[in-house]
Image 1 (tube, helix red, strand yellow):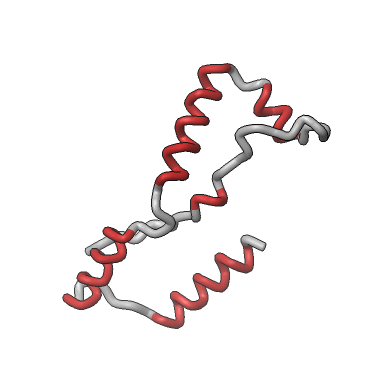
Image 2 (cartoon, rainbow, N blue to C red):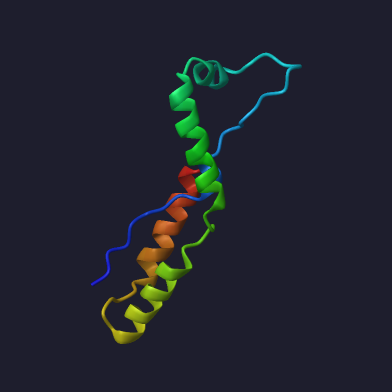
Length: 92
């Protein structure tokens, strides 16, 4: 049996790498500036790695499709629709 785990789109974890010089820094940017250089390097590397990932894990999609067709997992369409609606209603 395959266990499905929730995932968030990559655009929800991205943060600006540089700020324009013509405006006051936001609270988030002020916090980022107080981070140590080594932590900032790790965060920059993580952002770059995340930006290269596809929006959809096509291998996982293929696994789930195959498991569905073999009858290893079942699909409750009503529960899925409710879950999708709940996810997007919270994200607005």
